[in-house]
Length: 374
Image (cartoon, rainbow, N blue to C red; front, side, top):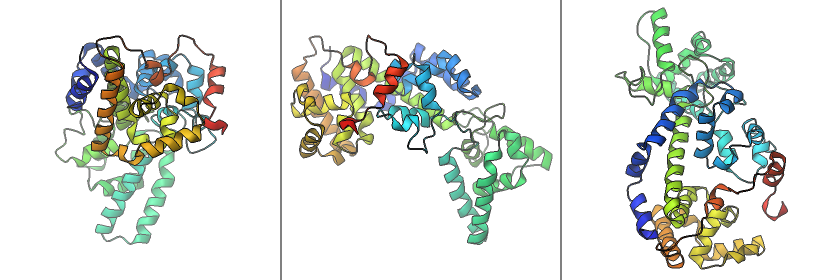
């Protein structure tokens, strides 16, 4: 068996190649193709939950595989309004649930995601200014677009409103060819294309702006609004592949799995409390600092103060510094857990898995607990 440092280096030396190899594995390839082809057809929570292949794929992608059984709990998560700090998902300590809810739009379907709306507004302001429009005119045009867009439920609703179409055409600097009738047919084919499919109608256009236009909207092949944008779907797929790599690495060496997990979560670490709130991150930090797991029983604020005195939290956002940190971790893990001997599984630290299955009510109660009793 390879040592922890060497195994980790082999996986991360070229993560793109590792992801490519993983995606080519027959079972992973089949699962991914099914997700990519079918998530755009889902229009309700019931359809999502009823399709176990889609639902379980998404749950694994966000590190929630062990929670697949808790559909009542997950329904509350997906029905949460993330703009409301008091919503169910926002009140949960585990941020994976918020990430999961953010990846779908079961509560409020929209022809554009918040990010896409922000982008098209910026594009419009720039293009309209180039055409000589005043700031006031641009402002009113954008206000009208924002107010009308929520009424769009299908691609035909969008195409029926000339002001919406005109705004989008200005923003992307394009104009559909042909007569009014043929132009709408052209636009419909563009807007219902999958921009991530190189063989799609939008992707085959010479002008790349048409593919960008397709990516800016959230229409499925049949013209209805998707519960995931194509970009969100691809993010879910990327997350699934990464989770698969970590799980497979963990079967050989749990230290490697912890290192990969820490690397993936590093951008979300904003303070020592971020580490203390995650058992897997805490295990890595304790190993690097040579601490016993028993130190986790100490006062939470005392632990946080100690970690901040020993770990430069801000440096973890820098690739080179993070690399040094994880090099130290893998070396220390190997010293304490030689690869020639069996290692203790820490999968439960990352996934929360247990042999015991909690009821949804008990789970909801526990997820509501915050560190320090706050």
